[in-house]
Structures are given as structure tokens and as C-alpha cells.
Image (cartoon, rainbow, N blue to C red; front, side):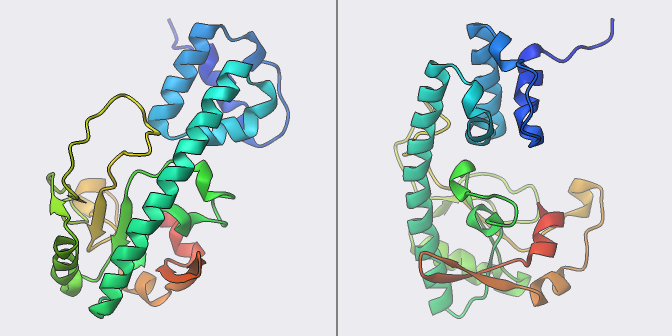
Length: 226
């Protein structure tokens, strides 16, 4: 028997095609299918984007749930910015150049509103010769390595806490790991050659985040990295 796309998955994909058209799939979902859709969206970081584009088709209880997720993500975004600015300021004080790789670095070119993307971590890129100094900066701010590295970056850094997972992908108190990259690609891991990274570094630009100038990749380089 050929595999069949679940109805809830088809209802998810419909508004994400940006056509503005709907065949009414969302209106035919049962409550259990809505719960399956939301569970998948949470894991795939699609909940907020789906809610933004599918708003007119959502049952009231789904709209209420996603509105709560959006409020919690806004609080987490504020904490993300505070942590990112603190790290950036300390790197600059040590004369360590860096690039912000994700989050608000993708807005507005690839994300109309950074609050529609759930923040998982803070991704920064430093040149290999500066990466150990950058790690010292994180250590000085109380961050500690907490997991194995899979290539491209040092082991993720995290401030110690008593936090425990409660199944809420949008909890404002979710820890904020820091991934300190020394490379953008790992051919052995990803099975593909990346473009010349030194050229990416030379094409850096700065964006404004709440009055702070933050280095990022240029739009043309953000797309292949993403």
C-alpha cells in the first residue's frame, strides 16, 4: 500500500504555501488531528508561523493556545537578546570578531518577524584562531560546556541551572545554549562541500538590533548557510 499524507499534515502545508488560498482542509480536522498537527509543529518549530498564516482557519482553542505560545516566545526573545548582547559586548571588549548566524540575523530577508521563529540557541561564528579566546569569554560569563560537539562548533555552552524539561517548547525559562562555530560546514558530517568561508567572512554586514550594531552574514550567504 502506498504511503498517504495524514490529513493534519496536508492541512499544515496548505497555508504555508503563501498562496492565500484554502480548500478548507483545516475545517475538517478533528480535535485529535489538531493535537497531532500542533505536536508536529512544536517539534518542527512551525507553530508560530503556521498560526500566523492559518489564523482565519483555526478553532478558537487552537488560536488561544498559539497566542499563548507567541507571548511566551516574545518573553524568551527578550531573554535571548539580553544574553546575545552581553556576549557580543564581551567579545568586542576582547577584540574578538564574530558573526551572528541565526535568529534576528534572518530578518527581514527570510523571516518577516523574528518573533515568528522559536529561538533554540545563540549561534555565533568566530575565526578558528580566535575560537579559544571566545570560549574563555563564555567561561568568564558563567557558561560551561554541556554536550559533545558534532563538528563545526565547540561543545555547546550553557549556564548551569536547575531547569527540567516539562514538555513545553515555548517555556520562557528554557535554557539558552550558545553554539560557538569555528566553521560553517563540516564536509565529513554533511557530505557536501561548502563555499569558500573566507569569502563569507569578507562579505559580512552589520544589522541594527535594538540600537546595537551586530555583524551577520550578508543575505546572499545567509541563504546557503541556512
